[in-house]
Image (cartoon, rainbow, N blue to C red; front, side, top):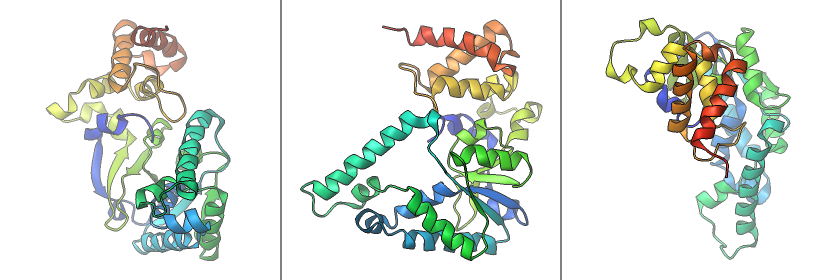
Length: 287
């Protein structure tokens, strides 16, 4: 999910922290579908064979109540309608789930493995409906986004309705969200914390080798607009990966644009994208 290798390249900027300590007394927005997928794996047999989402919803509620008990408010946002820009990605995921389900229901394997069952799990509106029903009964706030939760959570964060966002998806960085908790262990609270102000204040970065990578050097020189340019080149859920252009190629293309056009080029993507497209054509020539 998300932008290839983005979190890896941003590694030094991600601080290990405890969510419960950092966000105590604050409200965080949570990508509800991340939790749904996490718990669906625990109840894959119930979901695949019986379309029973009640155990999933109960476990979702239990974890939400645990987080509230740690002094952190939660606001859940669930995906709504399919996002047109992700049609190709969504169709491929649906195809893989359909194949996995067909192998279980009509294949010769009468005792599918846990992994096979998880691959066949589909979380549509029935799963969301079962979950928001229990949240509503217990007064826990939630919202079903018009499309994906990403943009809605970004809007909530920018409007100050949530202090930070918790997710696994690196796309959230590209949305410009100020504070993000990644890879949260909800039992202990351990998480990787992204604070956009640290990325923007490169003058305060330590003079250490880990901070002198090509990626962070370009980020320091060009600002956060570079992150969007890198995403366009490397690919994400919203745009198909360009043939022969992986993360390293995307970074090389961005660096070449910066060297020729100057460090301010990514401040205006309308200016930068044509130059970036030319560099990518060199890496992925048409047949």
